[in-house]
Length: 535
Image 1 (cartoon, helix red, strand yellow):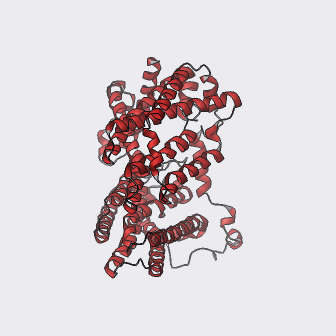
Image 2 (cartoon, rainbow, N blue to C red):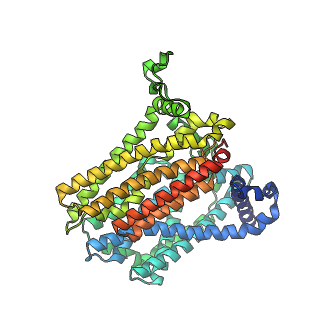
Image 3 (cartoon, helix red, strand yellow):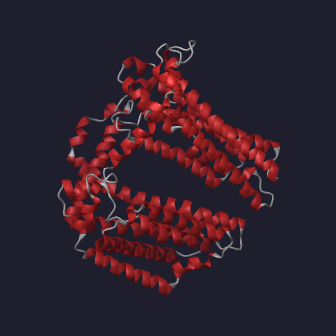
C-alpha cells in the first residue's frame, strides 16, 4: 500500500511540475531563465514532492474554509443580522446539515467517480485496483477530516461554540461520508447502478439540499434542529457507523469491478478532456443556420460589412456579423438573468423593509459582474472561429494592439449594455418599492456598475491576449490564467465580505479599471506578439 502511495504521489507531482515548467517557460523574460532540462530532472521533483503534498493539504484546508465560509457562515450571519432571534451557531449548523449530509453524500463518491487519474493508475500503470482505492480512500478521508476539523473549529469558535465541538462535527461529517461511500458500493454491487450518474437524483439532491439549508431559516423556522450535529448519542452513533464503514471499505474485495465500471475508456465522463473539447467546439462553432440565405449564396459582397471599414476593422466587423448567434445568444441570456436577478433583489429589499435601500446591494455588484457579464465565451469563439489559423502568421501577431483595441471596444459595449440594464431595473424597481437611496449614492451605484462592466471586459480580453490559454482542443490549460482569474474573483469576494461604503467601492472599481487598462495596453503592445500564439 505504501509503495502504491509513493508511486501515485510521484505521478501526481511530476505531472503538476511538468505543466508548471511548461507555462513558466512561456512567460516573458522569466521563461528564458528556466532550462528545458527541468522536465527530465528527477532529483528536484523528488525533493519537492513533500512540498507539493504540504501545498495540497493547505489547499484542502483553504478549500474547506471557502466552502464553509460562503455556503454556511456568511448566509448564517446575514440571516442572523435580519432576524437576531435566530442564533447564528444554530443557523450555521442548520445550513451545514442538509448540504453535507444530503447533497454531498449523493453526488460525491470516490470509488465510482470516473477520473482520468484512476484510468492512468489502474489501466496504464497496472496498479492493483484494490491497492489504488485503499490508498485513495485513506488519503482522501484523512485529509477530509483534518481540513474540516481545522476550519469547523475556527468557525464554531467565532460563532460562540468550542474547538471540541468543531472537531466533533468534523468527525460526524467524515463518518457519514464513509457510510455513504460504502452505500454507493453496496448499491452498485447489488443493482449495477451508479448513483452519481443519475442526473435526476443528483440535481434533485442539490435543489432539495439548498431548499432545506436556506429556505427553512429564511421562512423563520427555528434552526435549533441543527444542534443534532452536537447531540452526543447521535454523534457517537454516526462516528461508530463511520468507523465500521471504514473497516468494511478496507476489507472490501470487489474494488476491481467498481473501478472497471468507472474507467471505461469510451465513457465521456472519464474521457473528460475529449468530451469537454467536443462540447466547447460545438458551443462556439459556426452553424449553417447562422448565415442567412442571402449570406450563404450571394457572392457579390452585398452581405459583407460596409465599405468604409478596412483591414482589421473589416475583419472584426465580418466576424461579429457572421457569428451573430455566438455573440448575441449569450448576451441575451445574460441580459435576461441580470434583469431577473436585479428585480428579485429589489423585491427582497422591499420584503425586508426597515429602511433598506439599493446601497445594501452594492457589495454584491462586483462578484455578480464577474460571474454574469460577458467575456470568456466570446474569447473562445474568437479563438476557434477567427484567431486559431491566423495566429500562425507573424503579421497577424505583430498587429495585436490593433485588433485588441477593436475587440475590447466591442466587448465593453456588450457589458455596458448589461450594466445599464441592471442599473435601470434597480432604479425603476426601487422607485416603486420605496428603496431608492439618495442621489449621491444612486450616482455611485451607477458608476460602480459601469466601472465593473469595463473592468470585466479589460480583464477577459487582456488575459486572452497575454496568456492565450486555449489549445486546439479548446482546453484552458494555462494555470496562470486560472490563478489570475481566481485573484480577481477573490477581490470581488472581499468586497462582498468587507462591504465598504458604496462611494468607496465605486472609487476602488474606477481606480482598478484605470490601472488595469493602462497596464494591459502597455503589456499587450510590448509582449502581445510573443504571447498571442497557437498552442
